[in-house]
Image 1 (cartoon, one colour):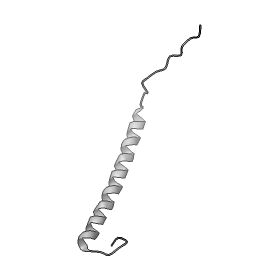
Image 2 (spheres, rainbow, N blue to C red):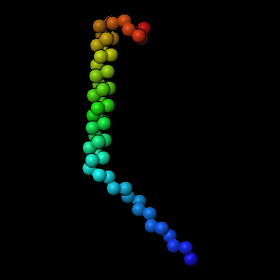
Image 3 (cartoon, helix red, strand yellow):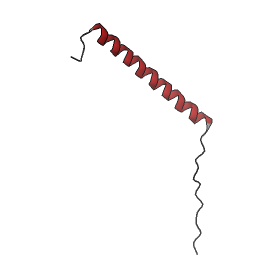
Image 4 (cartoon, one colour):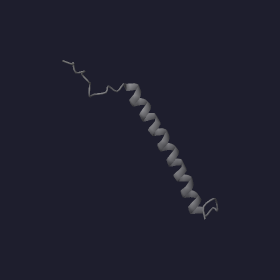
Length: 52
C-alpha cells in the first residue's frame, strides 16, 4: 500500500520578505506620485510635449 506524503498548506513568511515588499511598494508609489505630479503641472501650465 503506498504511503501518502504530507503537504503543508501554509507557507511561512519571514519578516525580511514583508519588509522587502513594503520597500518595493513605497518605491513604486513615490515614483508614480512624482510622475503624476509632473504631468499635472505640465497640463495646468499648458506645456506642449509628447502628448497633444
